Image 1 (tube, rainbow, N blue to C red):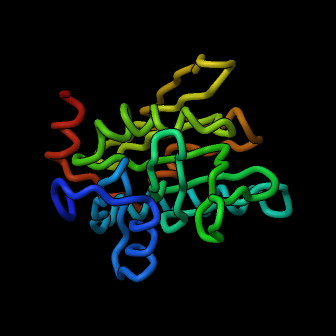
Image 2 (image 1 turned 180 degrees about the vertical axis):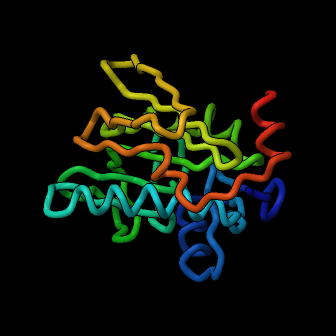
Length: 202
């Protein structure tokens, strides 16, 4: 869930970073605006933790780094600083110039969808991620019902799409050797029946 900190004022990236380093809360920076990121739901945190821990264990002693929630990403072509739920980086970290806390080269990004960010994550944010040269794969994980959308880059400006909604289905990543069932991603997640029904009927 995102709420605007201050309307109409335009901040530079440097002003945002100075503000963010000293803030007790996390904020995104979107082309001059500073946007507060509020806390997630138990389902959001459970799903993020399940996916991150499985990935991190599977990739141990391999040339990949897995980050969760608090790692800042800089998207220079869109002038966005953001905190993806889960990121995988291949090889050496590439950092924003002059920074030691902000990366620029994710291979895989996963976002757990919230009602307030669903459209943004699927549209404008995905478009921003696609401007990152290293970015190859995107997962959108619903927290209200068992449903995952997967996008994988096959060539320049071409992406394949898959979706999953059965507990026994296996999500296979294309950019690395990794598989996980929806049962494991949604382990200990408790769906609200009204939310689940509402989302299913969309």
